[in-house]
Image (tube, rainbow, N blue to C red):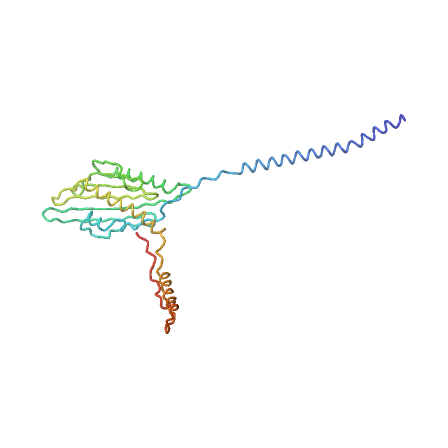
Length: 292
């Protein structure tokens, strides 16, 4: 009996060893899995980057024909006896991004001298770019640049600048005097922004052969009138692209013809076969061309 007790203790001790080893092994595996999961979770979080905000879409994606952006009547009033009544278009590699047109003429008044006038309008459009900013933001920077450029015109005298109300979203008129060809010229430059488009319009005039130099007020008035029309032309070009074409009259004519044939059939008239499909006139109405 004394011998069996120690023997039983040894057996129980040996039996307990595998159980402890298994427990230790499970604990080790569990710890390593937890570390792996934690590592993958942290790496996933680190790789996620916040998305950049999308820039605002540009309002206008095209420009009007610069030589048609100002009404012919306005051109006649501002530039009497213009050499080219339809204007002279400036060169451009991309008319949807940059365009211009100019007019000039000398109105000979005989013994009262002559009046010279010159008018120029230019358009610059900016697209929205993720790295450069929205079209409107880029146009705003160009607007400020053009105002500064007008103020710094070479040889300009008595330079003045003030806001021009009612022209686009923002506008400035810069006035100054300039002496050239032995004559005194009065200048007015209107810089305006509408959406992502900048309009720069310059109007000037001088009196020759003893004629008086036009007043600054009259030059400014003419420049602002032309600038309003140029800015409006930008919006009209955009409207022309989104406005659906007028409905063709073929559907209405077909319906009317069908009604007439139905009326004939119900009235019992004889000797006339229905020919609404072949005899009804085909519509010749075409969608209106894009205004410029």
